[in-house]
Image 1 (tube, rainbow, N blue to C red):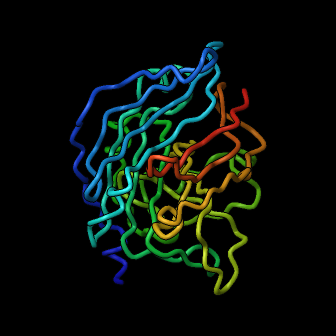
Image 2 (image 1 turned 180 degrees about the horizontal axis):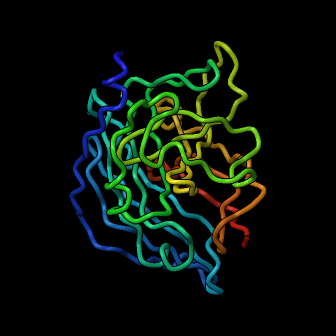
Length: 254
């Protein structure tokens, strides 16, 4: 696939199909869901579960089973709004799901097939939309704020610079991927203009479809620029109703 096709991001059907909804899961926690967006032949929506003490327990995206059917053959972006409770209790402002229709390489020489990048952004949608196209998507100089990195210690130690993308930012990926390593899921970090702007579980469509459950403690930075709750695990699973989840959990106050 040509490099230009890799970075073609088409804003997907961000059609709100329902309003935010609260669900009392038990006497100690409340789950709130965001509006639904059309994905494939189904829908996706955000959710957050918060304790009655105000501590986030889990945040993520729910994909209906048919959301994995009829997906576009080109890279597509879906913007998912978070419920107000998520913005109040975490540092996240919105979630942007990127469909990588054909997959791509991972540094230093690994690769990942067709997948979802589930990006949890710590900047507003307006700020994200203002990120320009990079002069060079692969390596610096990429121009604008892509080449200004956070100070040492504000990204995990074993993460290296990866792709720069318009309306997304600079990606950072684990440097453990060896030649021929076929990655099924991993955690990426994102920066722009010297700040951490998103974290993103990357999950292949095959892994999501399989329904296999994963709960992975991912690498953490040494320092944190903003005070708040930070997740320490990403999770992939399927519930008994056939819906698929990509989530963050095990929050710690930093």
